[in-house]
Amino acid sequence: MSEFPPNFVFGVATSAYQIEGAVEEDGRGPSIWDVFSHTPGKTARGDTGDVACDHYHRYLDDVQLMKDLGVQSYRFSISWPRIQPEGVGRVNEAGLDFYDRLIDALLEAGIEPMATLYHWDLPQTLQDRGGWTNRDTAKAFADYADVVFARLGGRVPRYITVNEPWCSAVLGHAFGTHAPGLQDFGATVAAAHHLLLGHGLAVEAFRGRNLASQIGITNILTDVLPASSRVEDEEAAARMDVFLNRWFLDPVFQASYPEEIRALGVDGVVQTGDLERISAPLDFVGVNYYQRQYVAANREDPLLRAALLPPRGERTASGWGVEPDGLVRVLQRVTSDYTKLPIYVTESGAAFADVLEEGVIHDDKRTTYLERHLQAVLAASVAGTDVRGYYVWSLLDNFEWAEGYDKRFGLVYVDYDTQVRIPKDSALWFAGVVGSRTFDRED
Image (cartoon, rainbow, N blue to C red; front, side):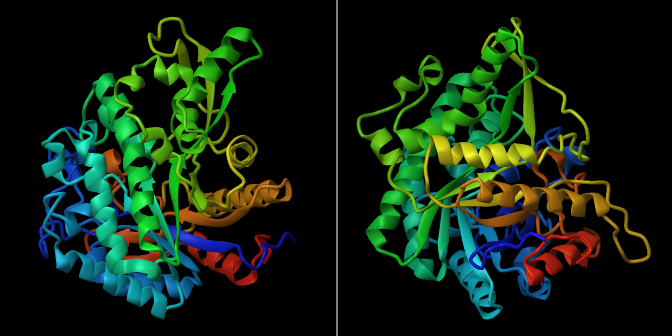
C-alpha cells in the first residue's frame, strides 16, 4: 500500500467558460469563446458555453458536491470579461462579487481555492484590437490581475497566471481550432510572447501587493519520444520537444528562447527587459499532463520536418494515449532541467464513453486511469520530485471547447437538459482515496 504525504493536496479543476454559463448576466461582456462558439462550424454541433453547467447559479450545490467527496482544493478560473467587460478600465463589481461568494463558500466548506487568472476567455473588445498579438494586451492582463489581487487577496492561497499558453497561442493562432480561430504563424509567435509577458507582468503586480499567497504558471507538457532509434527520428523528436515544451519552459525558467524559436522570428517582438519579467521568481509550477507524443522525421513538414504518430496502446474517447509513465518523466524533467520549485499537477484526466444506467455511471476505465496517474505521481515523488498535489480534470462534465459537449471528462455526470449532477463511480473512488490517502483498489 502506498500512502500520500500529509501535505499532499487532492483537488479538482474547472474553468469559467466551460461551466459557468450566464454569459450575459450581471454585466459580463463577451469573450473570444462566445464569438468563436457562435461561429458556424467551429464547435461540435454548434455547441456553446451559453449555459454550460449553469455553475454561476448552482455554485453552492457544486461546492457541496466537492465537500461530500472530501475534495481538499478547487481549482477554478476567473472570467476576465466578468471583471472587466471591455478588457480594460471599468471594473464590474458584480463579477467580483460572484467570486467573493464562491470563495466564501469554499472556505466555509474547508476547501482551499486555487484561482487561475486566464483560462482562454479573452474579452472580445481586446481581440478587436489584436488580442494577444497586441503587446498592450499583456499590460491589460496585468491590470486585470491586479484588480483581482486587490479584491480577493490572501483568501486565495495560490494563484495561477495563465493556463496552458501553448494552447492559447498555437491552437488559437496557428491551427485555428480554438478561439480566436486564426491561422497565422507570425501571429502565433507574437501571441505566445505576449502571453508570457502578461504572465510576468501579473507576477510583478502580485509581488507589489505583498500578499500571503503564492503564484505560479501552468503549462501543458508532454513526454516526446522518437518513433525509433534512427538519428532522423531522434532529431525530429528534439525539434518537436522545442515546439511542444521548451517554447514555454525556457523563457520562464531560463530567461531565453530556444534557438529554434528565435529562428521563427520571436526576436522581433521581444523588447528590453521582457525576458527578465517573464522569468521572475515563482512559488510553484503547475503541470497539466494528458498524453505522450511519438515523433518521426517528415521531410514534407516545412516547419519542424517532423510528424506526430498515433498513440500506442489504450486510448481515451478523445483518441489520446494512456501512458502514465510519461507523467513521471515530465515531472522529473521539470525538476532536473528547470526548477526545484514545488509542482502541482493542475490537470490530469480522461474522457470516456460514460453511460447513465439506472441512475449510476460505472466508469471503471476512468478510475483505473486516475489510479495509474496517481501511482505515477508517487513514483516521481520517490524519485526526488517535489509534487504537492493532483487536480482531476474535471469536477464536472462540461463544455470541452471545440468538442462541445461530446466529450465527458467529469467525476460528476451532468445532464445538460436538467442540470442534474450524478457522481460517477470514479468520484466515489476518488473520495475514498482522499479519505484514506491511499489508492489501492481493494480499499
